[in-house]
Length: 76
Image (cartoon, rainbow, N blue to C red; front, side, top):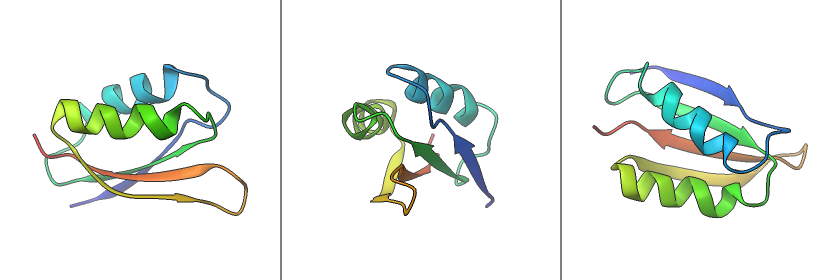
């Protein structure tokens, strides 16, 4: 299992989710991706994407810089 960082700061909806979806295709099942996003819509879009696509949103927290960090585990 590896953990990778995907920086989606500065991108607006739907780009953070589209980048996450593309990135998840390149990692193995069980790998974790840390997504950094500062688009307020990502707080709705990323959890919804994980639920619909079958991936696990492990955590969601605001960082010191004001971006939100989403920890996503590839499940399928």
